[in-house]
Image (tube, rainbow over all chains, first blue to last red; front, side):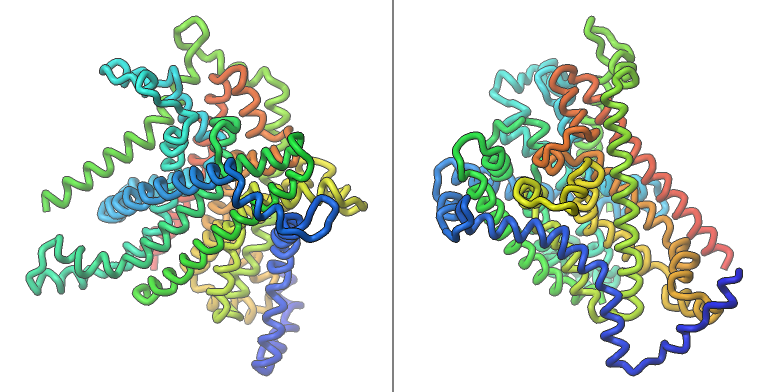
Length: 301
Length: 264
């Protein structure tokens, strides 16, 4: 309670002239920006400088050329892109339907709360626990594998393996769908019931409403979210690391192998160049997301 | 209307199968015994493994340190932007997605370079233990969703009114933040903290590349190489505990808003 009495000193400073007030206000961002600069910008600086120099520190483009042309890295990029595209599309379509299904349930039903918290956990949980849950379900002796064998569908006889690209894709969808639900729910909430009513009054069927009103409005938001899902899968490594211990050629696997450096000297710099290539790919995707996000925001005001 | 309801049932049923089956399978797998029956041997093995318990404590320590740092960085910044720099809200939201652009494996590659090539007391202190080395970077990983969670929480309260009322009563900015704003957004803050916990309990990429192998998720993977059942039990436990914590926060927050709504 004593604080109430002796504190009103800077209230008087509040009506400062606008210009000085703004530059003072910008000072409030210093801790946040400084932290990002040091702990995100720092590592990024060393990735870039290492990617563009040889082990002795002399500038060179050899690492970048190696990262983009050597066959094993081309294979890694191809499978990373394929995995990311497929899981982003599956996640986007299923996630949108799921989000809409949850939104059209009663607002006070526990389904919503369970879905929103579960999306949070599952979208960010990636990593280790997910890998082991899928080993328990679809591994050699997993529950789903046994059930499917019981009804005459032998996955492993058909060539399926949990530590293959297909198995990894099935696992990735597990965090892609919840992330889509999180990203697309605000846009779906922005579809005003009046639009549907107006369309219906003009004689539109449900399909025509979605085709000509809802989908065009949703398109930027859904497209942007799909791009985030792509970046998310492209960057992910923990699940693959726990599930496969490096047997699938993905870009992160290639980076980790190059960094461990016991193959040939100078590989570390190639690893950093691969990292730089990853950053460039994801940056392009995220710029696309921001552009679409701006367009989607038009409808939410 | 019935057609509209039918696709909902199909979607929800499909989601239930896809999302619950791995959890169910994990539960079943964790209860298997070597003899072919069911029992608690995998779960009992957790308590008997001192390495696992130590790793759990290390990771919980990292999680708490990470969550505190994240909130110290995010809450004042998000409040400040909403009150004083609303024009920069978009720019800051873009800044908070920057960590997504730099994948953990790339971040780890940059840090590994520093670890290998730069000396000096500052870096030596930073890389001295898992907690000091990993926490600063896990904070970066947690920023995007923590910022979003806290900002959503702030959007739902009359922030300007609350802060102005507090300041008119003589509170400084820090006091207003701590005693008025923070309690008002506590469910968003707890949500952000528990998502941070989820992140710390699942992250192995940076820890593995920087060779800090005494964290809990890495211990799970190590255990998984010899006894998959124990690793599955641990995975299931950490998933469910985080989820139950979030669910509890969500229900507590929901009840509070509802009762406030009815009393006004």
